[in-house]
Length: 403
Image (cartoon, rainbow, N blue to C red):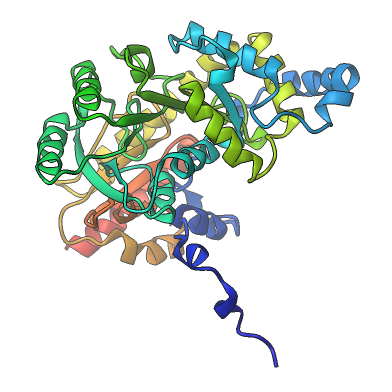
């Protein structure tokens, strides 16, 4: 008799939510669908020739190390290069041992949650917030408290009211997770005033901040901001970032920068997860940073994505239903659209795909429900003409449903 495999699955595994984005990408891979869904870079920004040259040299000069096991925390040479590069960007790193190299920043989020959160611990998140982070917090059974956003980012006045209410019950959050610059999914950027207020609240109510920063390297508009990590005077900010958006996601490189004691425990967790991040990727990326390829590539990224963003914003103005609202993102890959009430974007997704366009319904970005009339749209990956065509098709669909 064949066993009932479901009976063998662990309870933690059963709690793991599926990523809507990953599921949508499966459909898109079949072809004939304009994908405004996933957050993929445009392959034209990959520095292929430079990476080919670097890969050859790395294998010739460092092949014995690049193809070998390496330290869990990350190859020291790469962490030293990262420390120098982060320092130039205003992120203080006094010792390379304050850095752990991860398999993309998604693993950094998971390691942070695994290291710091017990079941039932409170973690404050943005609403809407980054879906993959919300899923991690669900897996570790944290209690999420969602704080709404406006054009200046997380509303820290609402946060303060919530903290005061929790304190009156003898409770407080352990962590606050934020993407303060070019937020995913909304595209908004937290104002300097709110960044200062957030750090004051973290000190007053004694919680840590996880600053996820994949997008501040390339901004399309001038904006006054400093990373929270740069403004942090008490060592409360754990800073996460990635090479996926500025070099290539296939290298699967991210990193976390934080207090040595916390990074030590993250290293212990990673030892039991995958031993270490691929050595070859670290050597290749380290050389790309050292040669200045990243900085030379960023203006190309900005120029290409700004053009695509503007195409999407213009198309939204032209084709989407009256009463729709969205953010003009100053960086990143996305804008987030609020349609008039009465449109359920999750229910309409199959019909949109049948018409040749995929997007990400917005409701799963809200930790406590809502957002049925919202959707996230990506402009980094599709060609400009496909962006306009996709928005035209979606606009027609949504107008029909509102008629």
